[in-house]
Length: 438
Ligand code: HAM
Image (cartoon, rainbow, N blue to C red; front, top):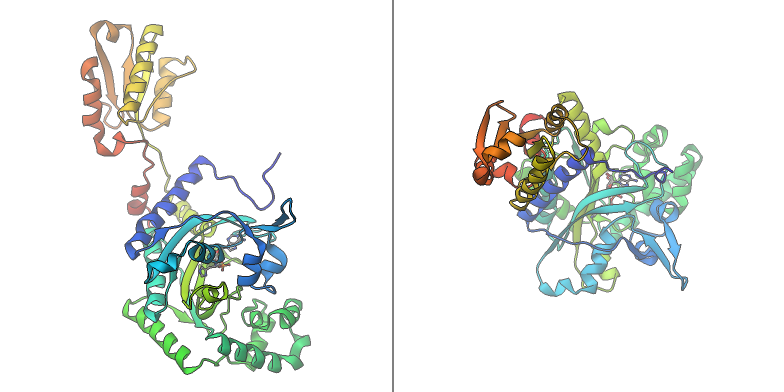
């Protein structure tokens, strides 16, 4: 049996890095006023056809859809923006007034051809800010930058554009169609089909020939004066915060709900699938779903792609993530084992991570196990120790060994482990920030 194509098991070592990324999100986003939201993994299909757009690749080719017993079409969510807008309206979060700020982490599903950095079940971390101000666009991008800073993730590029309002987008599409009509045969097959379905998507075709032709024939400059002002202020807010970006006039993104600001974050180490994240403004989605006239902006980052960049860096810096165990209890003989088993439970009750041997191994191999588990302290308990009412404790980092009265053992452990190792096993993640120059 194998995992389904395009899905991946996250094994314990790698799960440490996942936690590192999730913890960074949970610590950075609230600084910007974001609260966590969790929406279901399944949604009605119409939620996505109405928001992402009937003619987009996601809706046409990539959704996992099933019919429930009554024939209703249900989808595994391909993204989280539309579900969040649905939840926002369903629970009348707009009644709270002001700007609603939400963040999320979780699996998304798209039936794409799997390759490096592209999966069928992948994970996103994202934020959505429901409200309108160009400075909010600046804040959303600075929140992304702060998240990457927390992870020490460097070397990415922010590409920025404005698609304008619905009227501007329509004008852009009409002009593009009329210019490309006569050159259609020169475009790639994908672009020829995009021409019919979703002409704007031709603008960010990756095919070199198409790019050259489009850049030569067409300059997208259809913003109305309000949208121009908005874009100017977005850039100004980023300049104020000294966030580097590159204006990319041909950037469109593959979701129909975008209006005005769109952005993409790429990383050169990712190869073909180089978008580590993307986002933009969707000023009409909330009213299209029957809600108030409220604009919104957000982004989503691909966790697997963040991991590809971080793992590359970990390999080049030779950094090894390590768990740390508080106490390993090594015993000799049946009576000592039973006493050790009891101590094991007492340690855990006091919040100290502890392990014992379950395979009747020799003292030597118990010590080896303690070392493999990166135990801070090892207690050695045998007949002699039991008779004397003591336990021998070895500090594995210094090699120092001393005898401690059994009655005083828990206090000794607390004093010697320090606060960090007392609660739960630690994974050395904080060290990663300091030691690996990610
Ligand atoms: P998106 O551009 O479709 O935007 O996806 C955002 C990110 O998710 C991508 O840049 C990529 O890192 C990751 N991603 C997408 N598809 C896959 C895949 N098959 N395998 C691995 N990673 C993938 C959205 O989803 C919008 N909801 C973003 C947004 C939020 N816009 C406004 N608010």
